[in-house]
Amino acid sequence: MDQDDYIDRQCPIADCEFSFKVQVDDWLDKVSDEAVHCAFFGHTADSQQWFTHEQVEYAKKEALAKVKGIFV
Image (tube, rainbow, N blue to C red; front, side):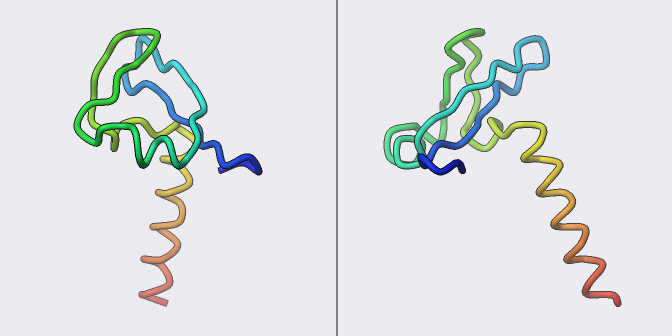
């Protein structure tokens, strides 16, 4: 999230990967969890598929660090 409360989202279709910003409150209050539509490609997917590549990599890195911490 940036200083203006916007988050990055990205179309999950590999041929598209259209990136956009949306205010957090709008994403939480106005976007349906079941169907988010890509403005560029027209693809529809649930809201859990619209993370950017960078967000996914960050989440993987954090999860791995937590798991490693459990076994150390």
